[in-house]
Image (cartoon, rainbow, N blue to C red; front, side):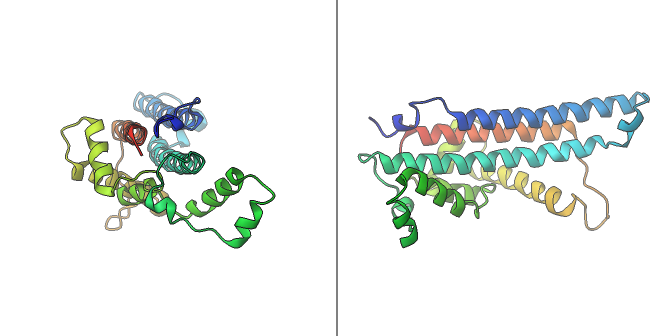
Amino acid sequence: MTSSSIFQSAPDKRWEQFTTNIDFCRRMVHSGAALESAAASQLNLGDLSKVQHTDLYRAAWVQAISALDHWLHQEIVSRAIAIINDRPTPRPDRLKGYAVSWETVEDMQNRSIDDVMTEHMTERLARDSYQKPDRIAEGLQYVTQKKQGQIWKEVAQVLGSEQTVDQVKQRQTDIAIRRNWIAHEADIEHLTGTRRPITASQTTSTIDWVENLAAAIRTVLNQSI
């Protein structure tokens, strides 16, 4: 069995869940756009008139990044367990250095190593945020021998755009920063005290970017350890 085939022997439920979450984001944008169009036509929306269409765009933006973060956590843990179970597969340095307590080792005497390690890694990695490029690459190094620079170089190549590696990373950084403004600062511009503008097209572009980025990362991981 090759190093890449150990991750492709069964339907990818994690990816299916990710794309379902991305579709949910797109539906929020469609709902917001419908409200925006109805309001512009001066239709009687009843209680819906209290809903701000831009709030749906902001919610979709946050959800898209959450979908990416959630998928990456699941993907890293699942691939790490697969590598542990496949002896011929070389262990990435960061996975080789993964330490567990004696309590965890003792737990393995009564339960399967897979279950114990899945729980342990899921809990530990939950402290990490996989939203900005450097943190994403750090997480991926549990399951690949590639250095951070190589990871992003290959991701940029898979994306197939004319953007440089730095531009790809900056785009993801900007999207993550805007997500944090929305989630933690109500998207309010400090100088003006008003919310930053946001449109359906901007949000749709962001959702598309996140989906394409995840697909590129998945491709790079499947190419080799």
